[in-house]
Image (tube, one colour):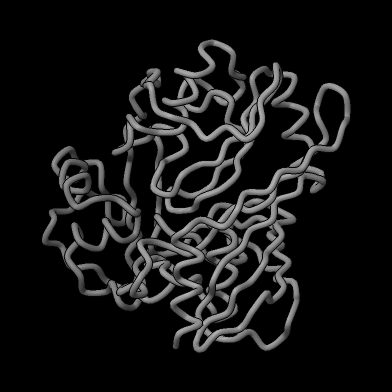
Length: 304
């Protein structure tokens, strides 16, 4: 059982416990109700009812049950395979596809498709729900992702990511105009202190994060940028661009909640991936063309 603990923000002071706990821990209201009914939410060490109003000095604890083990199943889903050999494959993940099964997405993921295509030939380092997965890209981000077919390949690729020798270049459209034509964002990323499903630039329980960027083109109200990841934290580009005051266009989590007309999700594409082959050391690099939604959005900006 996992224990998570938080204190209310000034905005959450005076809120009902059930509503505030959902925000504090990034849980659904129904999940919080279940925890409350089981006495697994404490305020200052004591169980409280859902209508309890939080005070500034309160400490809220939630005791989360251990996840139920689940094994991903093969599904015959078409894959856009850019490269494949006995050790690895590079796929072009479509926008809207989740990389691996998780709560709310047990089917239709990239892993389900990989299990159908590769059978048992996937690395097992990340367990039964993430076979072969060396790194991830967000559900609404399209582009290149590498998959390991065996543990030796997985370890070799993971080491390159750790050493920052793994090439990952993205392109995005961000809101507004950057002050400099190129630059580097070096700001640690960790879990958002209040909205637990989000990440944030923070010094608390954070990991170093570095993103290099350069301007490709400027449009009225928007900028087309190219970004190179030195590290690979969750939502790194989206968090860093928002930190600069220029969130990725269409990103309703880190940018304007209403989104951007003409976009369904963030305008972010994993364009280039490069690495040394873990078996023979050859450097391989692959480029994915910008998707139609991305170029269509750029064309719409040209008309403004």
